[in-house]
Length: 280
Image 1 (cartoon, rainbow, N blue to C red):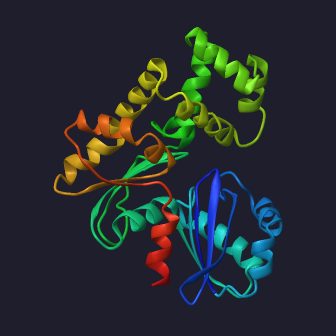
Image 2 (tube, one colour; image 1 turned 30 degrees about the vertical axis):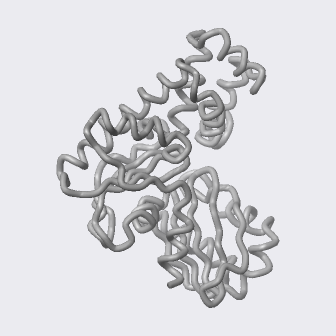
């Protein structure tokens, strides 16, 4: 058996195969080694019956994870997984590598990520080239669901929302200022909390006010991530991977057109393409 896993900070998608065919699949909480310690990772794995039942039969795991950005973090995650999947050879790479493989396979291209976080890199056909874009949800991630959650909360707490949107927000979440600040500053995984507000953006994406927030976020994404990469690799095709890109595709393509850029492909869930690549 072979398992292919793509993990953002919020959700990890698992596909388990035998002889090239998917025999089991499940989702777990995201296993980002920056936010989830080994003990918690093992607790998450042990709660999934599908993984417990197949653990001893899986012989190889390809694991692509947000936060696996250094050799130390990759090693910690690999050792943790190995203690659960005892008979598996485990390959850990970061989520940007997985996104690049899903979008380009072995061809060069520019790969952007717009999911719970944001990133971009030039992929040379073998690996994404190193850059300084990955600053995380506090200093970076412009255009991501984390970013939109942060902007939405700031607008709400600053009383800048239109009355109709504010009323919808209160009805949906029933949160006040002390609760929000407590959740962000005194509770773990503030990034997941911020991401949770992205559904409000998508459900109200036709509202003029929300459209403006989306467009401003995407303009920042192109200016900070895509344009600097494109200026170095102008002949490359552009691919963007992630839930935010897929669910707000029309607004994203509109933003790209402002910079005379064409997006070759938008992939919501890279796990499907990774599966094809690694089991064939």
